[in-house]
Image: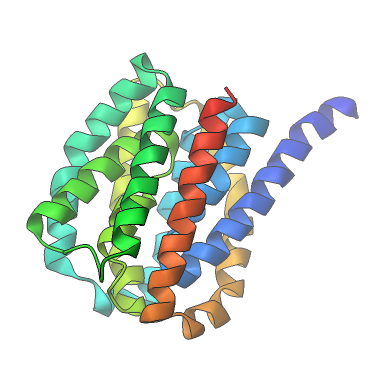
Amino acid sequence: MPGMWSELLPLLAGGVAVFVGAVVQGGIGFGLGLMAAPLIAITNPGVMPGAVQVVNATLPLFTLAAEWRRIDWRGLGFALLGRLPGSVIGAVVVVYVSTSVLGVLVGVMVMVAVALTARAPAVPRNGITTTAAGFLSGITGTATGIGGPPMALVYQSARGPQIRATLALFFLVSAVQSLGILAIVGKLPARALGTGAALIPFMILGFAVSGPLRRRLDGGRLRVAVLAVATVSACTLLGQSLAR
């Protein structure tokens, strides 16, 4: 019995985090990784970052089923162009570099970006900024399971359906890419895949609950929500990294 609880409690804790993350991401377009990854890394570190990437690859399917027509294809192309080399660097980080060091650097970077963009109308969205955001997302997403903030900051001025649809397809491709790279470098154990699959029902429930949130967030409200969640992401990363 104690052995069963020692396995069940981390799964339930991760499920609650995934549920909350799915509610947030269903509403504003990102947030699953930043809500779920820190708690899962603390309670069940052996399944990270693979378990989060399994859920990251599943949730976008639900968003795309409803809003795929609003995808910004040009911006998505630039983002994926930067994402591939970023994922390779992220894999190197997983193998050779302390993720706590990366977490501190990323946390500080996001906080600075939020501070700067909060004082400006918006981050300019062009080929350079979108490619750079995809590159940074590739590094952090592959290494830590949290890759949303760079892309979300670039798309913060977009309308709700566009940011959700574009980020959904980006996260879907990114998660599959990260899973493949983690498997190649030997950092994707079967246990991580099993845990990720077990977390999917929590994710589905969270997405279902996010429906009213999607209807309320758009325009200025969406931008405020993006900046707020990005700030929480940075603080979470800093706290998690400094505690290691």
